[in-house]
Length: 195
View 1 (cartoon, rainbow, N blue to C red):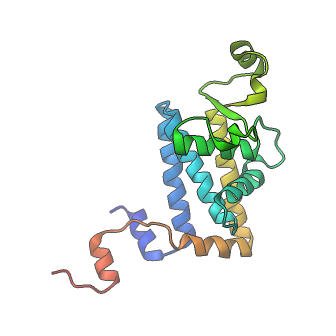
View 2 (tube, one colour):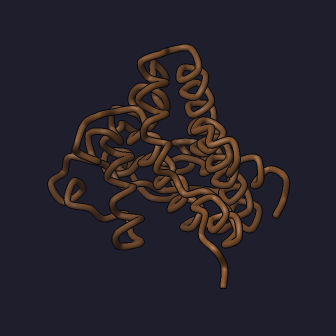
């Protein structure tokens, strides 16, 4: 067991646990990106946004939590090719069907996502896919989407440290995060004799 894991188990610091979980998530995202694994990158990314939304909001609806977090921490006042609803729809499609389809798309309440590995401008997209493409699709470089999430999460984490109410809320939720340990440490913690 590495020292980071030992200190995590012994300290029971929920913010350390949160930091360690998101370090793993960012590592996994980067590993997928380095290998051009677009779907696994998006799956991990959308799951991370879901989790951050859970930490941020007390709303019972996963959809509302996701949208609140994206609007506050990922989009903010930036002009982006997608809305929080578009991103939530993309999340549903990727996580549930591995497609760009969702009920929000079918109801024409959200655009489908097109994710590129290189920078693409609107003119290139229109030339390649035809007029009207931007009415039905948003196009974003996957690295740009990951960067938006990372910056948003770092801002969110800084806010956790400076906002006592948010810190208390997040700390309570982090207490149920998975942590790493060994069987021997669990037995010792609960004073169970190994036979």
